[in-house]
Every structure is written in C-alpha cells, then in structure tokens.
Image 1 (spheres, rainbow, N blue to C red):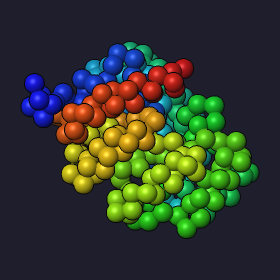
Image 2: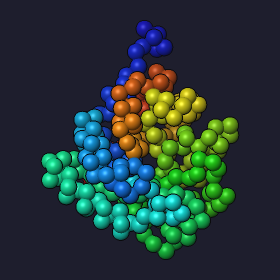
Image 3: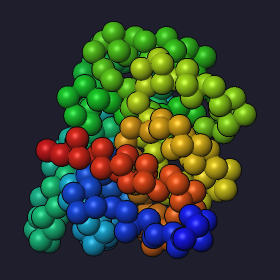
Length: 247
C-alpha cells in the first residue's frame, strides 16, 4: 500500500512499554505546570495509563520568572513523592530542571552545580521571541564547565524556521535536541509540525519529551500523529533513545 494511504497511529501508541519521559512540569505549585497536588496525582495517573515507566520532571528555573532553585525543587520532589506513594502511585520519578538561557544562567552555572537529567546532561531552553545574543558563548562555556546541553523543543523556536541552517549550527556547537512529542500531532500548529517533520527527516533529534503541564496535553496524546509516514519509524527510534535516562 502507498505510504500516504496508511492509517497514522495515535501518539500514545508509539510509546513503548519502557518509555522514560525527561521533560514535564508535574510538581505542584512550582511553575506553570500542575497547580495542586490533586493536579499532579491526575497527571501521574495518566502517565501510568499511557505506559510511562519512569519520568524526570523538570520545573522551570528562570531567575526573572520562576526563581526556583535545586534545593527547592528537590524538597518539593520529596514531598510529592511521599504523597503519591501514600496514594499507591508507584511510578518512579526524579526531579531535574529546565533552565532558561539568559545572562543570569550564564553566570549561575559557573558558580553552582546544575540540576541535571542524568550525569552531566542538562535541559535548557530559550525565549520563543529570539535567541540569546550570547547563545553560542553560553553553549561553549556550558560544555567547558562539564555539561552536555539538551535543547528543549527546538521546533518551537519560530525565528529558526526561516533560517533552517541555524539548526545545523546548533548541533555542531554540541547541542542535543529534544522533541516535544505533541508537536507531532499538531498541538502547537501546522508550521511547527512541518519543522518537526524536517528535523526528523534530517535525523537531528536525540531525545523526546512530553512537556506535560495539564490535562489538555494528556488528552492530545490520543490524537493521530500528523508527521509524514516516512518519519514515523525515525520518531519511534528517537522515543526509544530515552531509555538512556532509565534510573
């Protein structure tokens, strides 16, 4: 059968029985994700139902917006873990952070230890409006400090869409790419899905993440993927890469 006639799978059906998520906002009341422990409990239950076997939740650390710290995140993680286990939610989870790359971050990682996904892998993001002026210096210095940058949702940075060569430049600068899975079902719009397709086609993604904040995100995992059928196999392979973060 011709590939364009094949029925596309639902996104949640692409998550294998050993999927480890590395990007979510499930700790309650700490950023723009879960607001209450009840929200957290519902989202964790949905993770279990989707077949997520472990997850690393990643609250924002953005000094000028979400002024979290590794200490406050770890404390919130421990508090949340106790409550979830008391309610018989046994899915293992850890806490890291999603760092916003700006001038504060540039000086921060020189002096304090970052909260990483695993070993020296650190999840970073940038503004959706424009890249930091010192982006490549930040990435270089971050690696000199011993870290490996994992760039969250590169497909969502609209300023790169008309300058696709910048993606190659980022990769050459040592950046790993983490796809937001919901981009594959059109959650962020058709333009972002189109770029996702192109990045998949060129084999530029290293890992994936749900980036779940709320129930609307969970619901969208029941939708069919909108990427080219030729890229579905690649997407499955990138999803399987996340097993690297199993703990």
